[in-house]
Image (cartoon, rainbow, N blue to C red; front, side, top):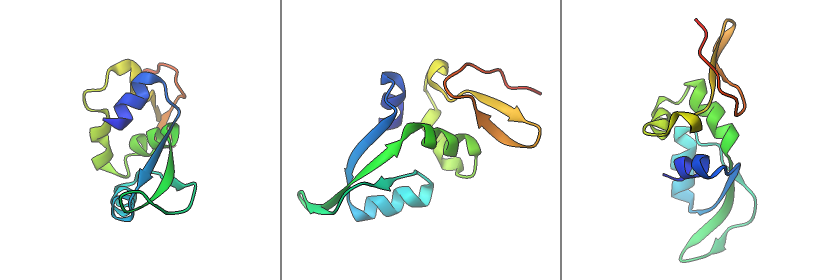
Length: 103
């Protein structure tokens, strides 16, 4: 829901206060998180993390973490990362421009 809302609203980054167990889980599934501050007590220990939406797009499109493909299920086509087949490697993103997958 957070990813899809970010895409629909045009957000480029997401800031979240995240607990250690959730950070480990998100890291395991491939969500690129960058801690930007110290842990603090906010109903338990949390730290501020930054998510770059375009970086998350690249991880989703890269296909190395298939579970993340669920993030784009139900997302309107105009908000999905633009994909192009590359003859030398995996799919790549055209930053914000519509693209038709090549054969």
